Image (cartoon, rainbow, N blue to C red; front, side, top):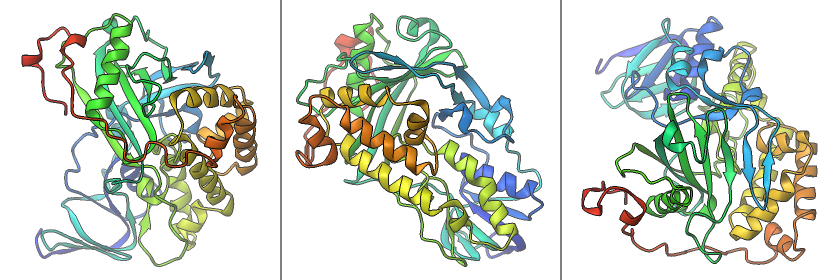
Length: 408
């Protein structure tokens, strides 16, 4: 298509076909708009695992998009908590099939120029549209506040000593990952995927620059070994490393509209993005139909205040020790359901979020740890921490170290 101009009469151009970009293109098409979508590999199924609270999903998304359902996920801090709120892992194929683009013009290509009404591809092709959405995701985090995770996919029968079908660990802070009390903290996230496997994912949130994959893998294997689970070492794995502090865009018509993680929809504390993005798709499309500013429609004053308060939360989380994190989460998961939802997922419930943050700090013990939470002490804890080189992990596996793949 080199040198061609396409989409001259298009209403919407979506650059990037991750889950949020594909949903945006699909719903714009369903609303009767003429849509052009651009992605380097538009037929590639997504690689990351996506999860969310069931009540976050929009009503138009069919149940087939859900891969596995966990009615009461568990949290381990100082003690076990059960969250009375259904959680799910999305089916990659089910979600893909629920978002067909049959009537859209889909172009395989990489965008090198993205402007308010024009997208230029690497081969010279130009796409023109009345509105351009940029959903390409985020740049590397550098030394910013970061979410880092290393996930290992384990057969359900092997995973059973820790996670049984229908159950899941949202946050597991038990001291089983081999990290000492004077090292940056991380927790385990472990859920069944609905395809016969369970993902065990050691996760770090809020550290500047994040935690390296080799350290997260070591901690994951230590946790599994503590429960008598030893892997071969060649199980499939996935890596995550992305910034948590991309801010919502400024309102204003006639500009490229950042959407999804690029558009400030990455939750600064949890690192979740897909469900909030899916729930805002129709808001953005309806604003276009009415000739309004989609950014202003999606980002009310209340929503921006929620984002600001959550950023205060991730600053606090990123400087805690493991014991402090456990105490803080013990306090948080005693909050009423609305306050928990306000922090974990609600887009604009600022009053409940304010109460949740205040009461979590106020009920965290010992009292002196509250100073770290609010940043009066140890504000730069863990900055520049040296995690050292990758270690030999053969003692945690069944496979000799000479046969292990390189995960450094």
